[in-house]
Image 1 (cartoon, rainbow, N blue to C red):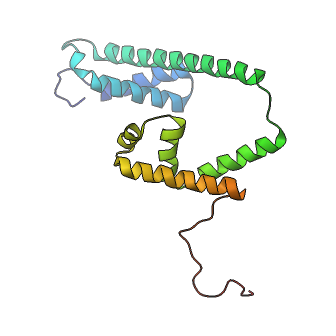
Image 2: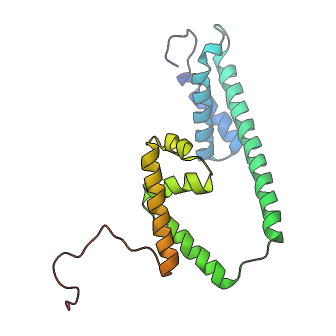
Length: 181
């Protein structure tokens, strides 16, 4: 793909790859994604291409295998979703008040600043240690702990007040707030 391997003309194979991908997935957008994935894999495995081999066959094989991988992934995901649906069907639906409260809490979580939300998600939902979460976000552990604490504080305020936590970093400038418009 960098032009150093003789006989390795990937650009000349794009039309054939696109046609084959389209015949496999029957959707132009999915076909482009499949071709892209196959080309990335081919680039990563360029060193395995044998000089003198048919580059078209090699690329078609990679494309086919990428398609099979996607089908397996979808099948596996469908099985997980079906299993989750079975569990969900046996659970008792929450009463209306509880459902409304959970929706409010979810909205409060999503209204957290992004850095607090992602820190809290990694620690509370994904159950990463503080160190693992800090490494994932590329920040010091102390910064992560501070973000988690602020996020929890906002959610606690939401729970205590029954409404979204107030925005504390904004203030009214000028006027008394009693002004008529």
